[in-house]
Image (cartoon, rainbow, N blue to C red; front, side):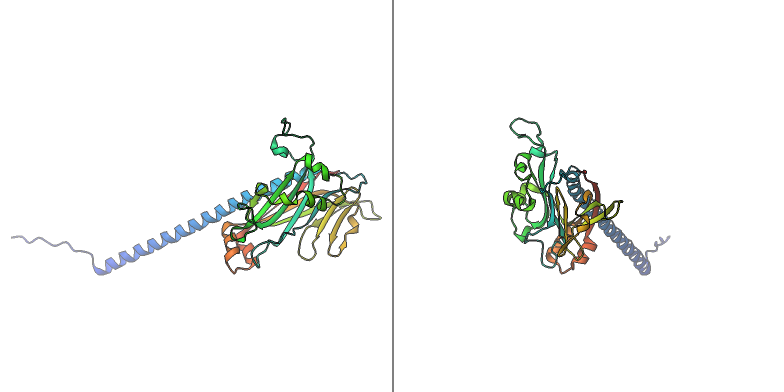
Amino acid sequence: MRTKRLQPGFTLIELLVAMSITVILLGVLVYMTGISMDTYKDKRNEVRASRQAKEAIEAVAKDLESMVSRRDGNTYEWLYAGKETNAQMGPAQKEITNTSHLIFFTGATDRYNGEIGKDGVDKGGDVSAVSYRLVYRDQIGDTDDEEYAVFSLYRNLVDPDEAFDILAVDDLQAEYSTRFKSSDLQASNFLVENIYEFTVTFLVEYTPVGETSTKIERVTMRESTGGYTSVRLKGNELVATKGAGQNTDILNGQIVGAEVSITVLTDHGLTLAKRSAMTRDDLIRKHSYHYTKTINTPRP
């Protein structure tokens, strides 16, 4: 009688080796999946930040490209740029680091809600007033409640029929604030969120006293030391204030361009700004994107 030969099985060592290889392969797979997810999240944040920045910069650029002013010796004010004075500027130690409040006149193509020429809607005129403000605010609830607040950029476009009343004034900021500031931060004027910095640099062309060639002065609205705190474009002069004094060299200069710079926080960065002890510098370095665009403005 023939005895059937038993097939040899796996030894304990072989099983342990196989299990070790499987664990290593699973570990590599999990690691690669994590890397892929992080890459996807980073790209998604970058795309979203790029979209938000583009929307904000394009709006400002379009208005500045059609800016209206008259430099014929009149004393009227055509543009005001200064620091935002709203009390709510962000969580403690992570307040908005730099923001410009802009008020100027422009030939906006979206005046009268874009229904130019429509009977009963278009009330005439083609010069609008526009204001840009960056604040920390709940734009959905339309309140300053910090629980749901985000860094919000607002654009308030005043149609020509109402802007006419502030076209010939000596103090544009004061007149605008009296008539329209209450509507600046309405939910309908919200433009885009997660904007952490909004900096405007005006390019001023001027001729130094005693010289014949022109120069370009960069007038940057910045809260830190060395920056300008306000710029007022009048029909007979350009008043740029830095510290306690004015830059008298550019009094007769004209704005020929502007550089708009925007820093956008990621959604995760906004969460960290509210709930973590991360410093402002680390927050900007690790969880934000920066965008800049140079614009040519009309010569009056």
